Image (cartoon, rainbow, N blue to C red; front, side, top):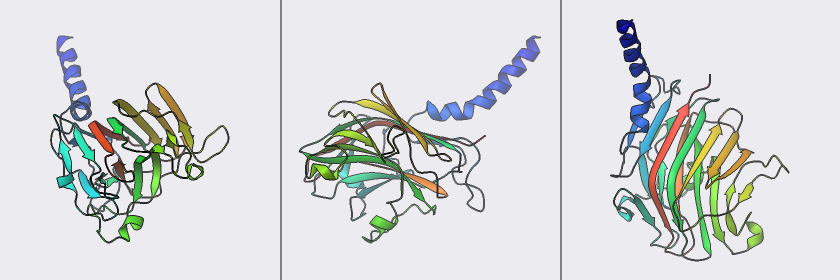
Length: 262
């Protein structure tokens, strides 16, 4: 009986150790065959990545400049395990873009991060998106046309708005916006209360096959229907964009898991 129990314990450890080692590890660790198969096909096993920003993980993230798509690694800073990103040049805020991650339709994508967003004026329009891309190419062309071609297929998007210019052109002036169909009235977005200048944890859970998305933060839960997966890969984009300068995005950790369909 003792021998059988020991064998069971060892098998259980082998089964669960790979996933747990990523979720509870330190900076920039991933598991799962995120490179796909020999033909570049999406993976069919769970994928997990966590970044605690103890260093800049340039294998996973590209640090780019708004519109120009030039390298902006020198414009971001690490502060005691936190990433500090500030707009110091008008319309050229640095942003984060993950490498392409293969995913199959029907998979569940879950993103969690601890973040603090601080606006410097009435023209803040921060965001986080899950982008659909058809190539595993990491680099993005600095050609201005790439701004539309490479990073504009937003499958799931959240905007963090404190934006008062022409208010009729935005879903809200002061609020968080999930761009997903509202089940209550069919509008293409859902507006909720904002959280600025303080740390909060947010989580996105997206069913790539149905488009169902659940957004959770500060005890608030929003559910809607976003786009379904229409590409072979996804990339994560995060930014604290706003007009003029001074806007800040700080990140304590970022985590993504992709669970394949049953």
